[in-house]
Image 1 (cartoon, one colour):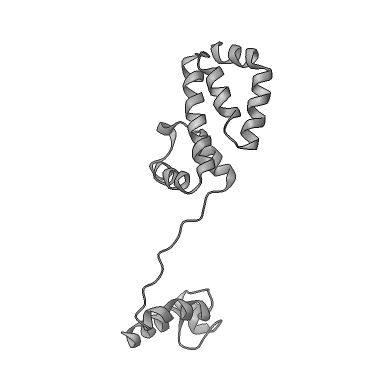
Image 2: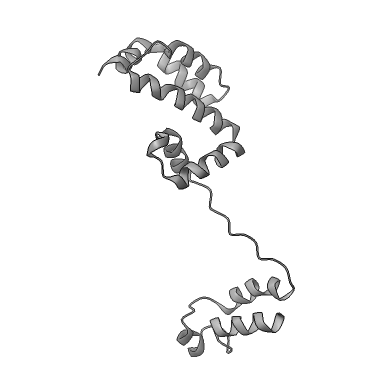
Length: 148
């Protein structure tokens, strides 16, 4: 197995090391050391780590949370629950956003006072601040929700 792994690495990179003409003709532009580090666990019979997805940026996470579930891609619908599982604050935020969206969609401000109360009691400073600002202008918010 070990010999086969190194033969494969040699075929990818070339036998004369990084930056050589042999390596360039084989099409690999990276460094020989990178291939060596990747192949080393295989030569010892260890499994290669599964590739990890990079976590979403704050902007991406906000977009995922605020987007209607039917407008998200299947990939995002698969990743969002995993993200929410690892972050209770985002899970709470997501639940509050999902409760606000039907108010706007149905132009129904009746649940607004309860939603504002839950927002204020969320324990998250940004959401509590938002609740305070919306509560001050709750009549304008209700008007905005109910106006077509």
